[in-house]
Image (tube, rainbow, N blue to C red):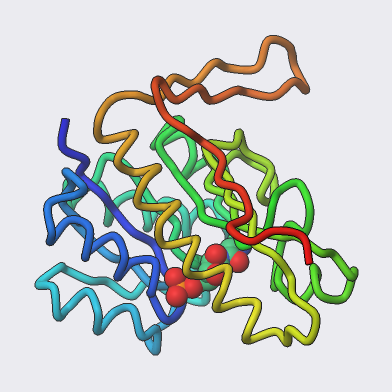
Length: 221
Ligand code: GAR
């Protein structure tokens, strides 16, 4: 089953680039139907245009509240024929108006091992905390901030002397691989979502026949 993807971005768009590269070289059976940015200056818009992918800028500032902004996003994605959504560095929260339109079909990449360091600048949070290991998480999006059911995680070491940029670059390299792999699993129909058993419980994701965690490449020093 080929994925009809909508990709939401706010910035550079390197994860979007990884998706487009994977489609281009035949690894990922998908088409990006639309890239939406909430910022007109997002570098990812150029990356999409170079790949011949339609783009839209929809600013939250042009909408009175979250439901009306979410409705505009849904309308744009539906019009473009997108049935599955990847958040690739999209820095806005999505509410029920959006999530109910794509049930269990909104995937986010986050630069930490959730539930550690949700929200903004997870790499800075990990450095400030003094963590020795961080990583990245691909998860389905629910109503909370970075709280949805986990699909896959990869661990990344924090090395002595790391600054923000060094750590962010090391995490980003793993993000690209993890996000593409997760999308491949959805495209292959291997992902099963079990809704939460009781109110306040957590939904679970099972990926048939896949390795969904990736450990540290290095050893103990
Ligand atoms: C990535 O590190 C992504 O994980 C992060 O923004 C960056 C976007 O980079 N997303 C979040 O922090 C979401 N909470 P990119 O524009 O080069 O893909």
